[in-house]
Image 1 (cartoon, rainbow, N blue to C red):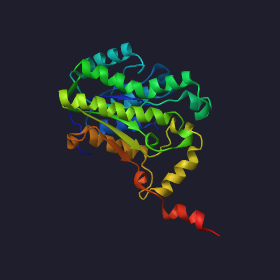
Image 2: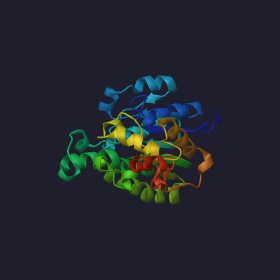
Image 3: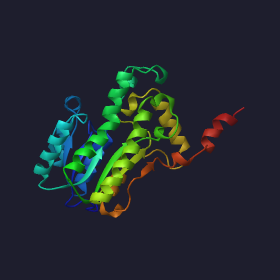
Image 4: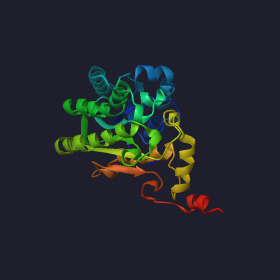
Length: 270
């Protein structure tokens, strides 16, 4: 360990179980010397194992529905109290599509489901930053990171309306990131991660096949949840103080590939 986050304080959204990227980020942040508050929606907390993670990382848990301004204001106020000062880093690792859960095709969306998924997955990021910004809760040179996916830029049919949510999420990072940088010297970035077998990710239709495809397409292979956590830690650290408004691809090179030899071999067989 390098003590990259020694003395830093944060809030980590979205740790559900040991497969979660947020869970791995919490473990790595703890190892690098940070203290933080863990949070998730009350229903997710009942489904997951967040209290186990809290014990492991000597953290406190503050439940919060990220679509509720009242909950988020309470979360930030309690976090400032628990941590004994302003916040240095925040991870937004929240995503949910009701249309995907209900098996509805993108061309036959239920728009109430669409709105709910957008609120949870994307608008929540604006809400989180709204509260942090207006409460002046972030330390100078702090870092806010949200997790995204390349479907925000390219078509992945079975990713459904989550692709639209991620596109909005990345736009919010740039727009709110401008004001955070200008007024508080705080960085805001998104990480576009490889397909990762988290509890949420594996719920996408055909996920196993696409995971294998991405592995064969990427020159370095897919990035794991732990590797994403390592990358996130660098963005929380002082080593990336001038990196902001970026969507950073962490995908083994997949995002710049057209085709790979391994994939072509499947088409060249006679």
